[in-house]
Each structure stands twice: as structure tokens, then as C-alpha cells.
Image (cartoon, rainbow, N blue to C red; front, side, top):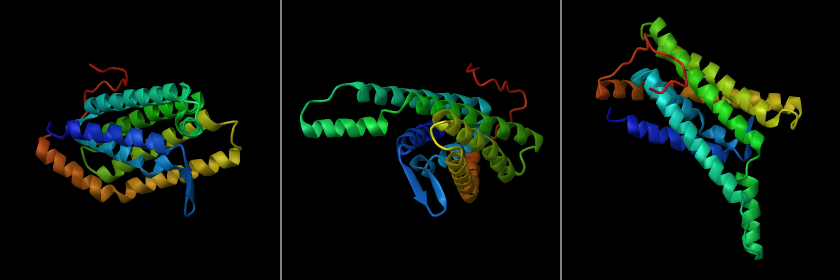
Amino acid sequence: MRYLDLITALFATVLLVSNVASTKLVVLGPFTFDGGTLLFPLAYIFGDVLTEVYGYRKSRRVIWIGFFALVLATLTFQGVAALPTPEDGESRRYGEAFGLLLGLTPRIVLGSLLAYFAGEFANAYVLARLKVRTEGRFFWLRALSSTLVGQGLDTGLFLLVAFYGVLPNEVLLTVFLSNYAFKVGVEALMLPVTYGVVGFLKRAEGLDAYDRDTDFNPFRLA
């Protein structure tokens, strides 16, 4: 498995960068979403590649690696934000800015972790089961179906846990629809690239995993 470590590293990097970029809301044409949405769809594309080529077991392991990377980054940011800063004006301004950006509230932290966990495992599960059902055909349909389920759970859970009762319901609905449409749209546009990467990896690794007898318990790491 010459490329599994590279894909794992890229997957974790996308998660961490997206998490930091999510601290800013942006407007792009008709869409309103957090900045992490620009990059986060790549995490689901990596998830599709991992499950399609290496199977659910390897994908499960990588998802857990990404989860612990997110926990470590979050705890580090929270700890640094809580530490006192020097008393001079410039250091204080930088410290306050850091706290505003990366000293995330517990609801945002919890929402981010729950959304990631549920969305990524749902994406991997749907793709793996559909691959067996379709005998490996219609990758485009399987990839889009798993994204519709995974991104729906991810986006909905995060907004409910992090912002329900804080933002008006109509704003939450607008942000959900914008995020969901943008993420699914990016995956659809990237399908030709995903096809190319999947084909290359199957040939290079000599793998094309089918999860016919797989235990899909997300907590079973053996």
C-alpha cells in the first residue's frame, strides 16, 4: 500500500485546515457558509477514494486518525487561548484575536466532532454497501449517494449542536442549505478527478476492496 500513508496525511491536513478556516463566515455569490466549506468537501472525496480502493476497514482507521487529530488540535487551541498573555498592548491584542478565532466554545467543539464522526462513517458505510450491491458498478452514483447522506448528517448535526438557539431558525436553514448545496456540488464537479485517482490507485496498489463480510461497527479497530 504505497499511497495509503500519503492519503491519510492529506486527509488529516484537510480536516485541520478546514476546522481553522471555519471560524470565518464568507459569502460567495448566492452561498453563505463558513470558510472551511471551501476545502472540507475534499475530506469526503478522500473518504470515497479510501473506501472504494482500500475498503471500509482501512477507511475506518483513517477516520479515527482524523478524529484524534481534530481533538488534539482543538485541545491545543483551547489550552493556548486560556493561558494569560503578556501585559503589553500588542501582545494583548494578539492574544485577544487568537482567543476570538481559535478559542472555540464547547458547543462548536462538540458539534464539529459529532458532525465529523457521524458524517464520515455514514459516507463510508453507504459507499461500501452500495459497492457490494452494484458489484462495483456506477461509482458516480455511489459516490454522490454517500455524499448526500454523509454531508447531510455532517452539516445538520454541526449547525444544530453549535448554533441552535443562538442563531434564528431561518438563518440556520439558510446556512444549512448553502453549505449542503455547495459541498454536494463540489463533489459532483470533482467526480472526473475522483474517477482518475481511484483508477490510478487501483492499478498502482493492485487493490479493489469489496466489503462483503465486513463488520461495520465504527468502534471496532482490530
